[in-house]
Length: 151
Image 1 (cartoon, rainbow, N blue to C red):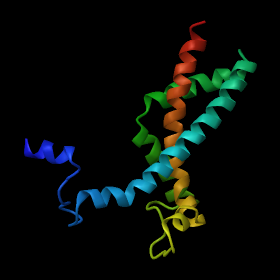
Image 2 (image 1 turned 90 degrees about the vertical axis):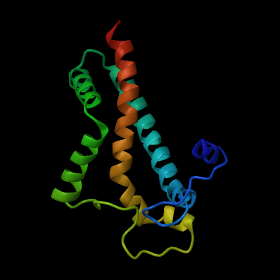
Image 3 (image 1 turned 180 degrees about the horizontal axis):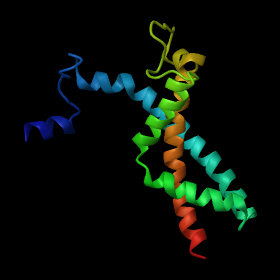
Image 4 (image 1 turned 45 degrees about the vertical axis):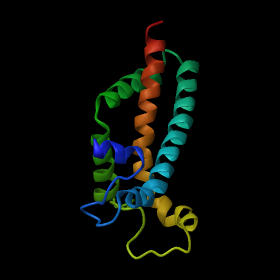
C-alpha cells in the first residue's frame, strides 16, 4: 500500500541502475520519447494518407495486389523484429545510419532545443522513427484494409 500511495503522489523512489530518483531519469528521456512518438505519427499519417489515396484511386491494380499482402505481412510481424531488420540492413550492413543512441558520443549542446534540432539528433532519429511510423501506419492500414477488403 505504501508503494501505491507513493505512486499517486509522484514518488517513484530511486533507480538502482542510475543511482538517482526515477522521476529525474524519466524526465531526462521524456523529450526523446515525445519527439520519436510525434515523428512516427507524422510519418504514419503522411504515408498512410498518400498510400491509402493511391490504393483507393487505383483499386484492382498491381500496386494494390502488392501493397495489401505486404501490409498484412508487416502487421503480423512484431515491431521489435521490424526495428532489428532495419537496424541490421541500414546500420550494420550498409552503414548509412547510426546503430544506437540519440546523439553521437561526446556531443555537447547549449540547450535541449539545440540538441533536438541538431542534424546529429535527427540522423539518429531516422531508423527509430521509421520503425514507429511503420507500426502506426500498419495499424491504420489494417483498419482501412478491413473496410476496403470487406466491400
